[in-house]
Amino acid sequence: MTQSEAVCDEHRAVNGRHYLSFTVEGTSDLPDGFEMQPSPLEYERLKDHSTGADGVGQVPVVYDDGWAVDWDAIETAADS
Figure 1 (spheres, one colour):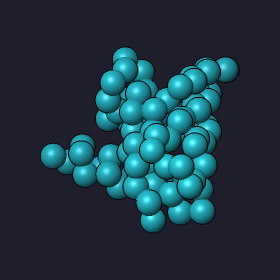
Figure 2: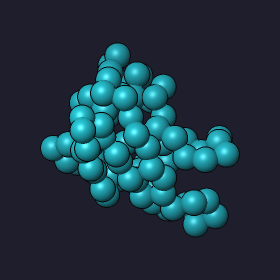
Figure 3: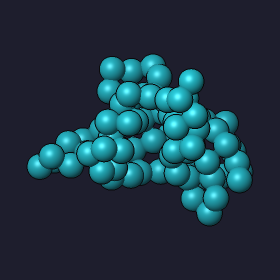
Figure 4: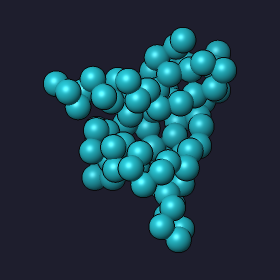
């Protein structure tokens, strides 16, 4: 698995659901972004543990057949 950081570059909220688009930096041989529709609990966790913005900013991500938020890294940071 490849670990990196992603920056939320678009956030839309529609009917109580959040839609996030992320750009992954420094990975020329992998896709440069991904989108997700987090659950309300996941959105709050992202908001609480991201850096660089008032909403969702920069978050840790992993690549394993596609980019995904690195929830283990977020959990580790929350426990610190």
